[in-house]
Picture 1: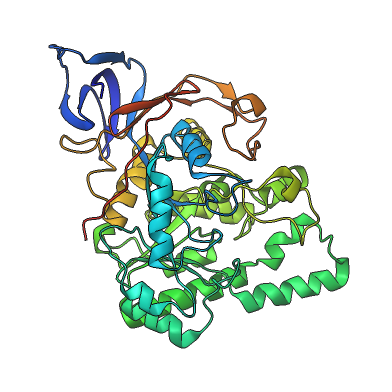
Picture 2: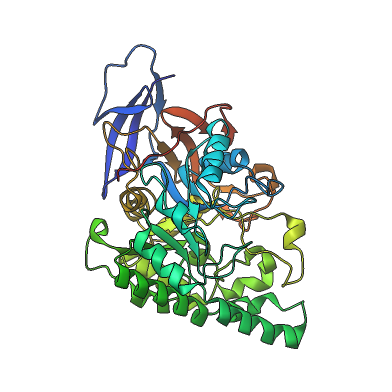
Length: 446
């Protein structure tokens, strides 16, 4: 393993920005200093003058589609794109084929990642109406969280048995992460529009089908159940201003029992973008109004929302280019989330300190991730260098997703990721990868 000294960086960490040097030794952060003048034998020096150094991002919600859906993405291709976007750790979702709803299948996915993932990895276990005993036996130190779909999902992963749902909330040894959309409301809205338009429903009606009402009914029910049972609940990808009333910023994150996140697409896009982007911005929950988008960004800055994530969920262009009812929801995001968020920094809407808090520190706190999420001596050397004065444009030649497209295609960003270190290894530099340097299985201090 090569050691590095990163010199003259603007270090963004724990609500401060300070110029300094960082020594990476044997995969760990050995020294942080205003200046390291004595260069250890064999260490490579990277001059970071004019660049910002941040902790590696921890993305708590990705779909890398392996096993069973690897024509869309794989652990290898998804994690390569992730490190190109500054994401050094991720939690992958259970709705693959087969689904990750037994401990045996969970461990099989960990084996797949061991020699394929460029980033550090964990996998969420999937809850169903009939796997409560498996849930009770999960080791909380080695698994990120329990994922529950409280709205539409593939296969049998919709948990709609209220008695079972309450038992899961009472007995889960893991944080419960939920996708909240009320299924009966969604189906009622869908059938009304199918009767009027047939299968080819105009895409701008997607937020009317997966409506504010559907989101709030499900989110409020999940929050009420968490309060009733004392469960540790994390609500994924909020998309409406109305849902914000369910959460609080009155207590520190480490003391919160109920937390929430927002994803980059719900901050960047709104319903006015459907005419141009079509089904390429069809997500569940749906991209909604400009007022929702503005309220979500304000809530992020005001700490009502605790985490920023991607919900990276790629599909092929062929799949996306179907009529409304056949076009799947989701899109690729891990490579471009950070550059997009840095546009908010340039616009004065999001500070670098707040960005790092929401994408690095808070996921570490919320999920009890060991030795990651901060630039601290004695922590793993997961680090990202950013040049905020290096404009580039997203096009097919620089997209790393297996699906080969991005909802940001044609967008010019002012900032780019120049270097990504995973466990002290320089895995990515200026659109090129050092092949064969893989991440580690994450562990949790629980």
